[in-house]
Image (cartoon, rainbow, N blue to C red; front, side, top):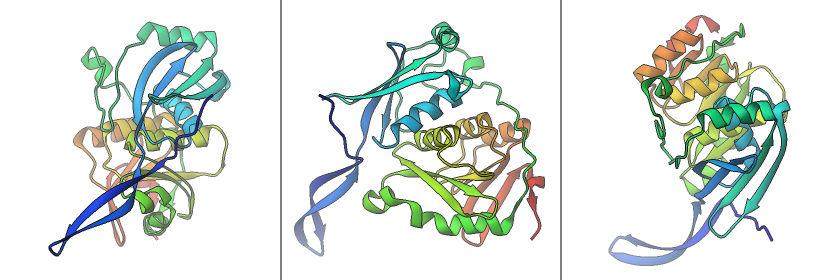
Length: 268
């Protein structure tokens, strides 16, 4: 029988401070292997936080071009085992045929980058063009930046997870997805958007650096703006310029830095 895995684990710790050793209980982020299985064939194993997993597998499938839309998903089943979690997804024949042509066996890690890429063409795919004419304000960006911490429930408990937030045009945060992996958190958010859990025009704010994968995944969902708490990489900036994504880094209270396509951000 399947069982539930809590995203927060309780452990015993020993704290040395001021010359004394004190025993206490602690809460840490659960990290567990999650196998994504398509039509009975295992495609990838990711290390992930076991929460919002249907959002995760949906967002991953979309951002990795395994499916073209949620209509190609027929069923999702979660199976918990002693070794981890299996997410069994049934997809339409057309999507599965495309997956089989480029399927590779790999094990994803929390900071996984080019795992399993067989050529430079595979390593750096062409990002999808962003066809989105939304405009935002600096005030809206700052409202989201300032408010994000209040939405990071797992981070408050464990101090060990990334967050991806969906923010409306006024900077109100509508939903947050968290995970030990920054890519996973973004995939969960993209999956939630695609599944219609909430609807609104907006932008994404993430608590990590902006790497090329984060840009590619955001562009795949036709999201106009990606703001990151930390720095962008050079390739992330190049790809954002190429695909038309507005990229913001160092998103901190009273300060943010625009690196690509700043025309979407209006003067206040």
